[in-house]
Each structure stands twice: as structure tokens, then as C-alpha cells.
Length: 167
Image (cartoon, rainbow, N blue to C red; front, top):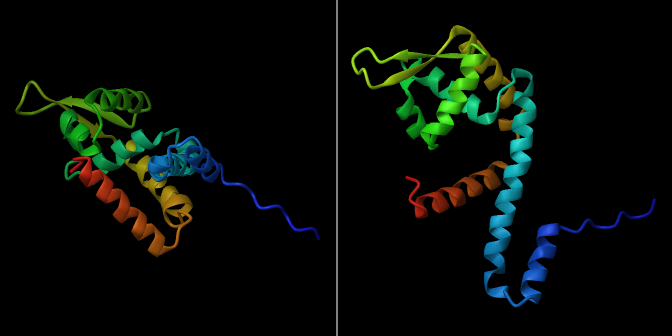
């Protein structure tokens, strides 16, 4: 059986091109950023495939999961935005879609008339539990890295996030 030719890593090729163009001093940074972006695409595709039967995006799943984890099953929209680290308009868009599907509802805050709560419905709770089980089985249980590589990745990304002022 003939030996298969080694596949060329497009990011490695881009690094060679960066160096050849005279940008060798920043080539490692370009490789790091491009690698993270590609890893994001790979993982997001796996997550989206697992969530497709529930007609959820990862953003909507995260909101449902956050609500399911909350003590009362509801949060002010602004607090959900803060916890998910996204702009309130993104959360509002997700809420609209989840409301249309019957998975959440908006309620007036019982003591603050300026605040609106978003609350998970019973259907939303059962949906997020099933979706979580599927993500755990199909994605989170094996992301394609050894436990040591996974821990190193988390440490590296945590350092990047901390340096960016993310927390």
C-alpha cells in the first residue's frame, strides 16, 4: 500500500509565508491567533451539530443553562448579559427567539418596575437538560485533546483573558 502524502497544515504554510514576507518577528502571534480562530470553528461546528435537534444555538443554550442554574430560574436581563459576557442586545435577541419557542418568558421584576426578568419555562428546563446531556456526551466528554493538553489550553486562554481585562 503506497504511503499517503503528509497533509500540509495551512497555518504552518501561512507562517512560512509570513516569515518570507519579512514579518518573522510577529509570525508566532499570527499563528497563535489563526490557530485559536480555527479551533473555535472546529469546536463550534461540533457544538452546533449536537444542539441542532433542539433548534438551539450555543448562545441560546448558554442563556437557558444560566437560567436553569439560577436559584429561581429567572434573572434580570442585564444580569444575564453580565454573566454571559455579551451585550444586552445580544441577550434580548436570544430571549426573543427562546420566547417564540416557548422556552423562556419575560416578567416584570416584583420590586423594581424598571427591570425585566427572563424566566425559564418548564419546556425550556427540560430542553436544556436534554441538550446538556447531549453536549456532555458528544462534545465535552472528548474535545480531541488529552487531559494535560486540555488543562494547558485552559491555562493559556485564561492568561490571555486575564491580560485582556476579561476578569
